[in-house]
Length: 191
Image (cartoon, rainbow, N blue to C red; front, side, top):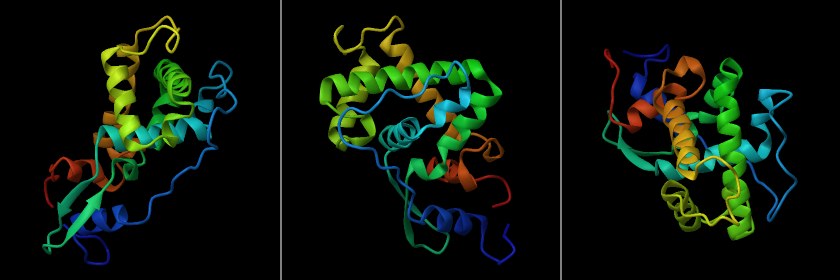
């Protein structure tokens, strides 16, 4: 299977993935509270939330080197799959999903600021990994996580959203160009 330029689907996917990713820079340290979702679920897509989604994707699914059909190697990043677009689509389509994800991201970022003094997206990779491990295990202290829902539920909500955006059907906004499928070594029929 090839595109209009004669390149294989695999080559097209990897060429798009090789483009420099767009990264959102946040100011260091605490910043104003993220917007509330109650009036409009699309507020989930403010700068702090989208930077957090990208950083979470890259920590939950580390960069991976893949081999192209021509034998050359390329590096793929989970954030290049445009998971934030999937999350926007899904939150607009299913407001309950958007609200759950909003609360999980808001509370997780608040715990990151409490423990480390900065948003998750601004922290080093090793610190991000430690914070994700703490969230998954429910290890944030009561002073760091003072909300009513479980830390493990927040982790599961975040993880599920990233997985859906990385491996789902590209028509829903994520998995741009099928990057997630190639990331997982799944090749659609006909390639």
